[in-house]
Amino acid sequence: MVKAYRQEHVYKHPWERVSAASWRKFADPENKRILSHILEVDTLNRKLDTDTGKLHTTRALTIHAPGPWFLHRIVGQDICHCVESTVVDGQSRSMQLTTKNISLQKFIEVEERIRYDPHPENPSAWTVCSQETSIRIKPLSALASMAEKVEQKCAEKFMQNSVKGREVMERICRYMEAESARV
Image (cartoon, rainbow, N blue to C red; front, side, top):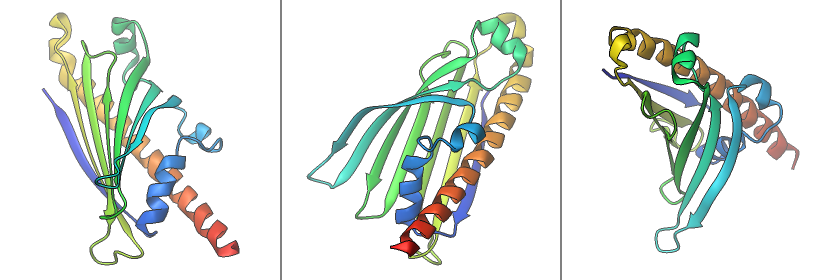
């Protein structure tokens, strides 16, 4: 069984500001309260491909794993380690992030894809964010019948965290807008 969902959000800010805000999302101390499920973020690799002009970045994320308490009891932990791969193409004004869990894979597989592109109706001032997430609970013999319910609970938590992430992005974009107006 796989639980998947797709969301779209329009930021009424230019792509350059939104993509910059994405990099600041986890670094801003004010966001620690809102994004309390994110425990640590470390950049593992950053490379600019001089042939294509694309920036490739890999980060390690340590998060408080969403899900019901009984799942934490079964797997023995509530911490999950993930890898986020980001490709930024400044020429085409596109930023793509793919995040996958690397721990707890015996129990759950999560993949989140986020893409930021200029909005087709107002490309110089707005940015569209497309987010796709898939969650797959691997059957746990005696708990196989509950896998669908667990997937649903996990999806609900991911959606709640997505709303928090958008709130943080909007706040950072407004801050950056005010900051640029002072210059």
